[in-house]
Length: 248
Image (cartoon, rainbow, N blue to C red; front, top):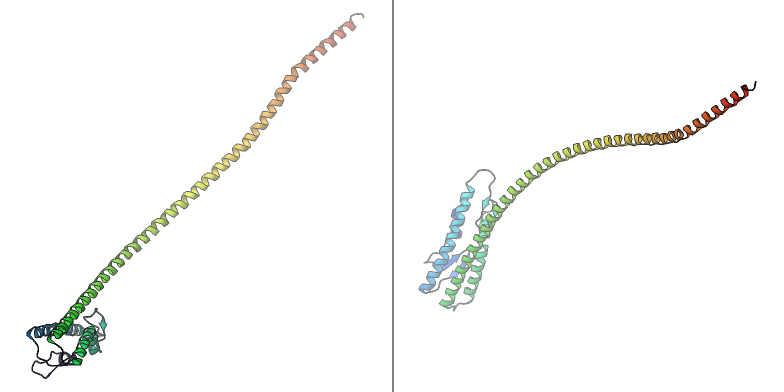
């Protein structure tokens, strides 16, 4: 990447030229106070520092590898294709040059502008540059925070996935144990049910035997009376036979 072209395009204006040209904008020279010159120098130094820092980043990024390359610009760390260096730099200073152009149009339209107004414009430009720097720092800080939070979230997701797999394996083992326990309980219930049926049948037999014993007991109570009647009848018959044999 040819940094000489960039430096010539975005270089600071010479103090002895009739017009100051900066970022393609023509500034007519005026006699300015010491305070105004100081403010302008501060603004030019700030812009030059940003320009040099951006050029260094672009050069360092371009010399990393010989394969497909991506140049990271200073604004919001946005990847830019190496085939468009001018577009990258223009996007880099778009917000700054916009304010700078507005101020220049106002200066060209007012030929009788006062030194105080010019100083105010330069101070406004410095404020705009400072605000841009703060915005870039804030964007970079947010990008770093987002990257860190994303890495932390991925780590938590990996831990959660591992725990989920372990929990699933443990749960599957518990399910197998529960199935075995259920089968064992089913077998025990079947065995107890068989014993219950057997006891029920035995109870029915016992009930029948009790009924039969009751009938036998009632018969046994009747038998002595019948035996006594038969015994009396036998005695009477013997008496009658003995009386019949006696007269003969």
